[in-house]
Image (cartoon, rainbow, N blue to C red; front, side):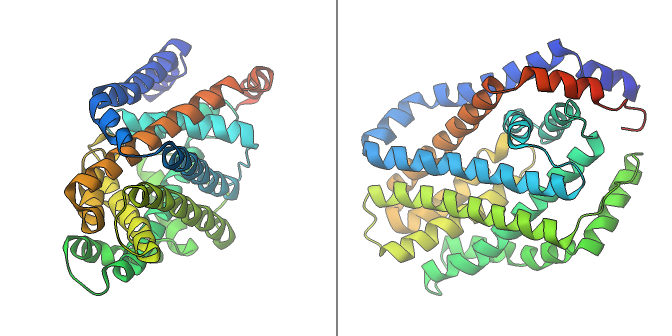
Length: 325
């Protein structure tokens, strides 16, 4: 049964249909919100929007670099072009309800380059765990600086994930994480990983992840600053970086929502409203979401357009048979 499912997933028609569905859902979000988007853009100047979009691209690209560092640590170092195709195109699977589709999309795309599915799935799981840990640390370490010891809505949200960061730090100890991955692979009836996760690989992934959070935090800061919050720049920056990290954790934990839609926006709005009020927070939240969606689409389409077809065909011919994968 499993082999039939995997054979179906290798069909170019099924892959093409999945890609079109993911693209359609991402574009549908932009079309559905077109009136609100137009109203939001009317309150922002072009320079702020362009700067925020550049930071959105940086956020997605740096997230891909974090994932690539983990995959290399597990024994599959991919060139930048191949890694971009797997990560950016597979990223569109987040827009299909159910987090499993991102795993499936990346696993199938990476298999074309000779990477076993279990290794791709493990790399994505570890990269997400690294993202959760770094985001939790930022939310609990940076956000209180912006709130000056107060306990409004944003501080309450930060307190709810405060217990999560120490737990995730323990899980990121290589000895603990390798045992956890081994247990999960046994449950999935998969062969064990050939290369264990190392401290060096995790540190590299964490560095890229922190850079990605800083990029998207700066994106929120640029949008909020353009609306004129009245807060000191340093305090507003801390609110933006810590607030988005907190919102991402909340959105990720709501696994049934496509790409954290809804929950992430509510959490980010609750924090940003402390500096801008409800109306300004709505503009920032909508603008941030739209720009990140546009960045996902642009990077995915760019990766598809720059794919080396000849190299991909050679990699497919050299890819191992899926006896155990």
